Length: 70
Image (cartoon, rainbow, N blue to C red; front, top):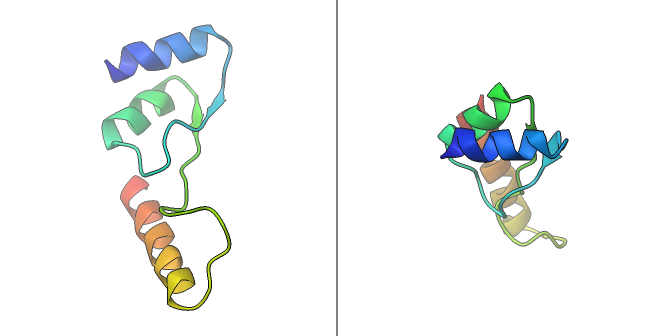
């Protein structure tokens, strides 16, 4: 199903997409990669300004997501 969705996205001439407000599944990310579609991932929580420990947690989530998606 992920490949089918990626094919539909590519057929519509899209090459840049943001699907969710959280980490995508690796299968979805792989399908988008096979079709040459850039998938933008959110920072893992609210997208407003964060302060103190909330900012540190956001940085940890972003670091972990980059490792997970690599």
